[in-house]
Amino acid sequence: MGEFQNPLGRPNNQSFVGCRQKDNPFRVADLTHQALRRTSSTHIQEYASVKELQAHLRHTNPQTALKHYTKVIPETKQAAVAALDDDIATAANESK
Image 1 (spheres, rainbow, N blue to C red):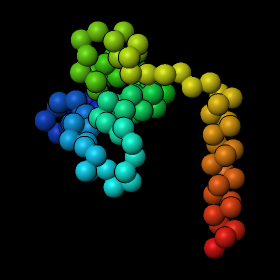
Image 2 (cartoon, one colour):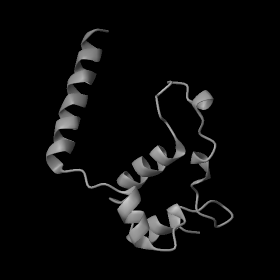
Image 3 (cartoon, helix red, strand yellow):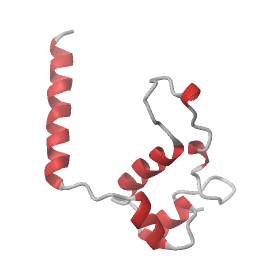
């Protein structure tokens, strides 16, 4: 069984299919299964091969997965987001 497969050996991306606004407890606007696929694919690319990503997304062509579902996040942007996250966490802990 592959890393991104369910116990039946199928790609495990079915958790995204049922995502609807009523199932969205945080009421995030425009939260769709496509948005979740793109987000997870962007992060998965750091840990999986292109073939594994292709299988996870059920695409016949790996270029489709790369072109439409993954984004390269520059290290400077990652560092800025991490710094902001640290500042927010520190402020939240100080207010307790």
